[in-house]
Length: 143
Image (cartoon, rainbow, N blue to C red):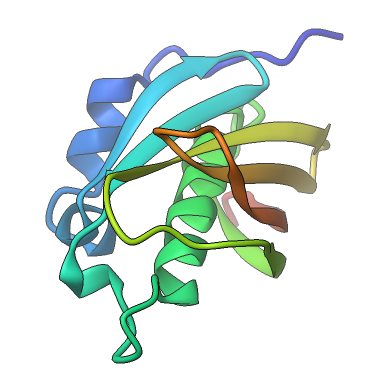
């Protein structure tokens, strides 16, 4: 079965939604939304680094988790209100010191009560993978 997008959730809506929150502060931009997938990017600045001058793992996780979370929001079943992350895991394979990182989240399971998303974070310039990420989202229903 082909994943279904909620028609009211667009790239513009997602980008506006995070503008005054962590995604906006970190400079995240959602770039492509299609059934079963969402892509994003983030320019790398000093605020994304740890004091050791390497990209902070939390910056990478924030991009991956936001991309997966927004993808979940766009794919919620009819009648569902929202979602919350109940589990996440990341493997960090490398780093970047300049440019942009990109992320693509792909649906692995779109159930009534849970969704599972995988994401790959890469260096935009070289395409080299810098992190693999997986999360499970719990779908929230009206009480």
